[in-house]
Length: 167
Image (tube, rainbow, N blue to C red; front, side, top):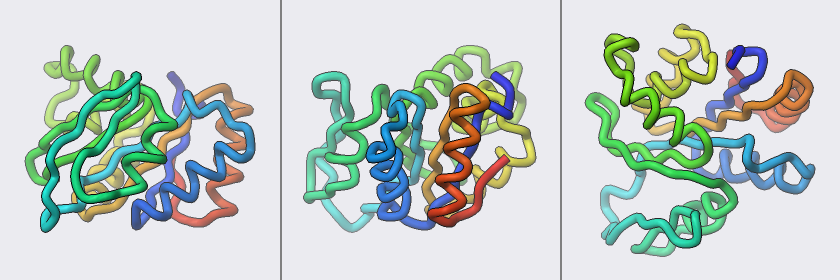
């Protein structure tokens, strides 16, 4: 996929990425075009587990509306423990792209699993490095992919709501 058909927002918190996801839902955007990735931010809480329920990720532990409401809107999910980043949860098509890329890891050199998935969808290496640094710093990623027109609309919405937009 061409990078013209993918756009990324880096959000400081789960609240920010959640607001963006809700805004996309309200605007009638195809939620199957969205993916999110973020470091698991609950080291002091008792996480009992993550599991699949009716094709959606669920979080079982201390109440957390982000995982149980926002992630329920996105299909596909994965949990990775990445060196230098830590535990990362991914939801949406990006989870499948990462898993596919992991099966071909020799092609990608020293990229992280998330980096491989982003590269697969056409995100430039410079943007991938920014995304990996953002994840390591505890930030959240929102990826939107689709036709050039859909991505253009997504880029406009992301700019309106703030936050760095890549590529």
